[in-house]
Amino acid sequence: MVVLSAICAALYAAVLVPFKVVPLIPGVTEMRPANAIPVVCSFMFGPAAAWGAGIGNMIGDFFGGVGPADIFGFFANVVYGYVPYKVWQVMAPGEPPIIRSPLTAAKFVIACLLASTFCADIVGWGENLLALRPFLMLGNAIVFNNMLAAILLGPFLLAAIYPRVKAGHLLYEDLMPEHQVLPSKTAWLGMLLLTAGVLGAWLTGNLISTGYWRPHTLPASMTQPPYDRAIAIVVTPLVGLATLGLALM
Amino acid sequence: MPIYLYLDRRTFIHRLHPTVKILAVVAIFWSVYWVDNPLWLLPLGVLLMAGAQLTRAWPNFYSLRWLFVLLVFATTLTWTIFYRQGKPLLHLGPLFVSRASLEYGLGRGIKLAELLATSVLFLSTTKVEEFAFGLGELGVPYRVGFAITLAFRLVPLFIDSALTVVQAQSLRGYDFDSGSLITRVRRYVPVTVPVFMGALRKANNMAMALEARGFGYGTRPTSHVHYEIRPLDILTLIGVILLGAAYFLIYYTGHGAIAPG
Image (cartoon, rainbow over all chains, first blue to last red; front, side, top):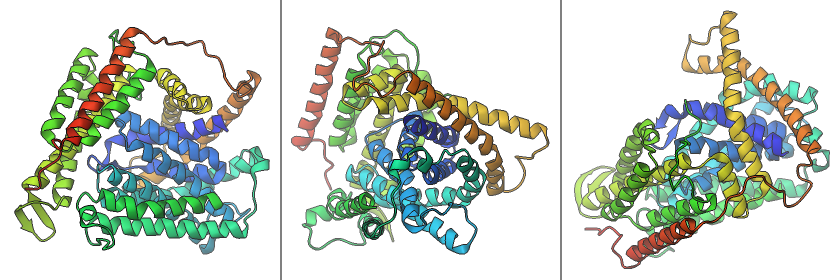
């Protein structure tokens, strides 16, 4: 598992680093076709891919400099590499993640969307909490960037690699058969909480950071720019709800 | 393109204990966090520049110069627009610019540039193994440190392997350069198959080699690398703690804030 994590991390960083020079929003984020790698690895290697995504992102950050917000980046990428695996286990147990029908495509998009948005929530929430950048900026740029890579490249990469990895008995279920779990009612409840938390955090984060929604229950001093306190009070429980959901899955 | 920023020099910062270096980075991050006023951030900027001069790390700063410029510019612009406080100098629809928002935006820009400069300085003076060792000393599990070090080592290998496949395919007439951006990116998908499969083969062999060497058997693995805490490490640690305390004091006395005038 340690070696597999390191391999996933290195693959992710190997694609991430050359594209560091192509900014999407200057000084904020760059073109990240590498973001397809954690999703692809997640479907095949599960938790190993999740740790790999976190470490790979950290290596990428090392190239362009690290900051306190990179701690959130680490965990956001761990989640980005873990959610597709868990969501697929619940929605399509035993099915290969290769798109052959509209239903599989829909499941794939749901898995990628939840992973991308949760990742964006954590980074946007963390950076706004430290008052470094507004939620609106990162919360949306990351969803766009992650989804673009996952949807445009993910299915092709999976179609090319998954059958070979399966034939080589190198899938997570093959390497760690004792960790295989079947979806239960608790897992579905977890998925429900994850969806509510992820989408709720994204929506409230956007509304608060733009100043369109000022929660009246909060003191006026908390609803002033940079909205770090309002984000801390409103978005934090929703991020927690999503994390609880993921833990239940 | 360099993967590592480490510069092999013989300066006292290079020789500091890895854990002290990590704690120094944390202390600088802490100091930067408390202050919004650009004027109070300047002394820290001077300190970082002195660090760059002392460690002769300017080549790394030079190679990242555009990143610094973009970071300061984009952050200043963003917060100037989002920080809707103070008497407006310009108010056109959603666009709101005031003296306070300009000061706040500039402060954020300098803040992020200083965070970046701190990390560049750290990476210019710290090897990956030292970083992993420092993390281990701070209680991070050995396996995590090992995975980080291994991943760092593998990145250049995978980039080389991908370039070899691209060159081999180009020699066979495969066109990587025509078509739209998305078409070109998709053409690289077949390249990933041999790189991926090669990586997995490597993972399999490496896992066997590690198991044969008893990896993960003991709870406290031994290491052939040792770093001793010297008086200079203690002095540096005291220095950065004082720096962190001073910046907290600036915040506490209200000097680091921006007046919403």
